[in-house]
Length: 134
Image (cartoon, rainbow, N blue to C red; front, side):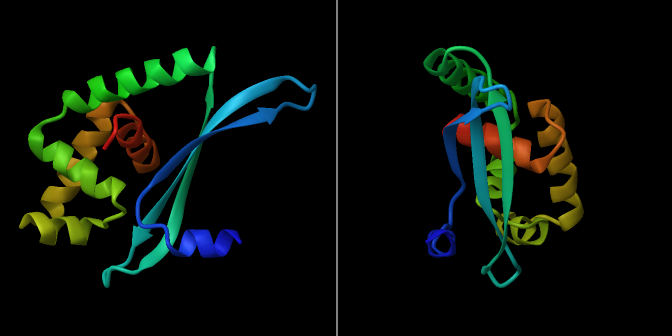
């Protein structure tokens, strides 16, 4: 059952699904589910994000992966480290501890990651990281 599957989820997952609009028109969605851990390292909740995929599936998927990789490559080394830990579901406090930084510094880098990836939310940043292969 789904609850059991999610109980064992420790890394973000990205899948593409086929959907149908009210009028019967087919479209594809990319759906991402990522665990978010509490201070003790236990899964506290899951973050979900969904985006419609335009155009031919294989070409669109390849284009998204290429675009995501290019956007991640533009980030500084530290910003990529922060992004990888965000995608692993780590909270600011956990990232700060792991990288020996202050929480305030992590928040600053996290903001720069969102700006550098040209996204508005952490969920979108995590989706880009997954698409880029992180």
